[in-house]
Image (cartoon, rainbow, N blue to C red; front, side, top):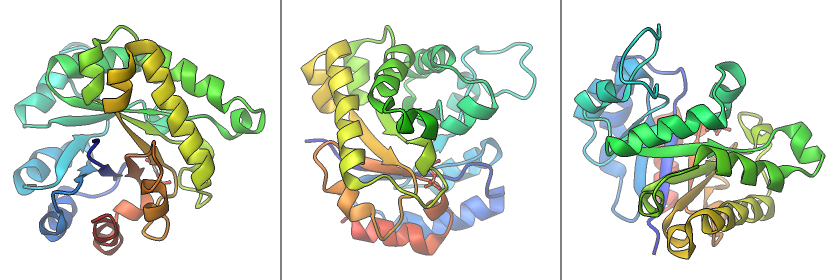
Length: 247
Ligand code: PGA
């Protein structure tokens, strides 16, 4: 039985004070039925980790090298030092704006796993690819690149977020049928790469305009184990609503 996992992705939002205030307000609302968490900007991570007892706190990116001439980057040992246990990698905004590729996402995944930090690996097709009927091919190819050469046992513990780019921040969420179908393809691809046991254990999130009004129907789908939530994770009220609706 897979435990549901719902994570907010704050992106470049919230100062340290704002992050702490949010965590103090929401932490006590969490319950054991699911894993709840937030992806916070680097600067807010250390304080967020200190304030979160029930929420998990994820970095939104990392570099795959431990140190060196990579101006502006943050390494896995730096995250380890402040007690970060989760990290979002390969978000479409990073792939589109900051040059992340399946190859770099794969290197990041390997380094995180080595450190005992759980990667939340994002994949998803663009609107043009969706319109051209290429969703399945894109999902399979992103997964084979991003998750290449991991151990099957490690794959069981990671989280994959299927986020169609056309649904991110647009209010145009994927239909429940499409989301289920694509999350099923994700699981099928994991089975092809790492076997049935890994496929049955891996947690798959849907992301793209998830909000209190639609979370329940996504969660009811057999291959959707949770959600990665941008806009609706920024306000205490809407995130609390999502937590309460997924009890
Ligand atoms: P959204 O963002 O919920 O605002 O669509 C999702 C994401 O980018 O992870």
